[in-house]
Image 1 (tube, rainbow, N blue to C red):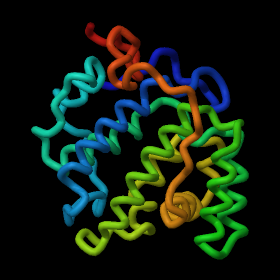
Image 2 (image 1 turned 135 degrees about the vertical axis):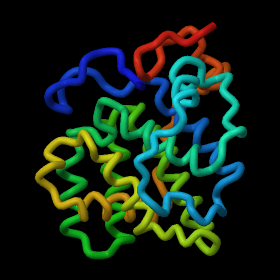
Image 3 (image 1 turned 60 degrees about the vertical axis):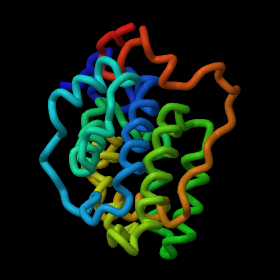
Image 4 (image 1 turned 90 degrees about the vertical axis):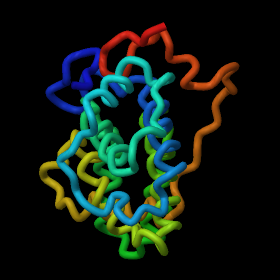
Length: 224
């Protein structure tokens, strides 16, 4: 089971935030999927109870730098990606912007206009960098999947439906909001072309190269 470094807070606004390494693991899964899966007819088209093979989950938990994802089929990688997001113990959408996102989705009829407004909200400095980076990677991936929709019929609405539950699972007050609003938020972000990546100082080495020796997103040390 993927674990975290501290106990899950009773409310999403309390306690810990997403570990810094989460975007690097997500990026690795996305890269593997896009090398072989963008034209797959089954990519994200159905819900699945599968969480991926235990050995893959263990490898991502302990040594994501070294794991070879090319040996796994598209269905396995897509199930593992969704399970990875589902098992994150803290909100992907911060409580500080959640209500504003839902209000915007409710009050803006045009999906294109809604997407542009949502992007501005999520690019606020109040959104933690790790959360923003994760959303940038995921939504850009879904945009690319949607752009290959002639092959796999992955329209933004279906992709929003496929990911809204895992994205909003721990969000503040999400149980009181119509799930259709969560789907619309994801759909609108995809239609709007994804989020802009915030500028940061260049690192001397790749993100994944730095993770050896650090704690994993789920509480284990990374093998040197």
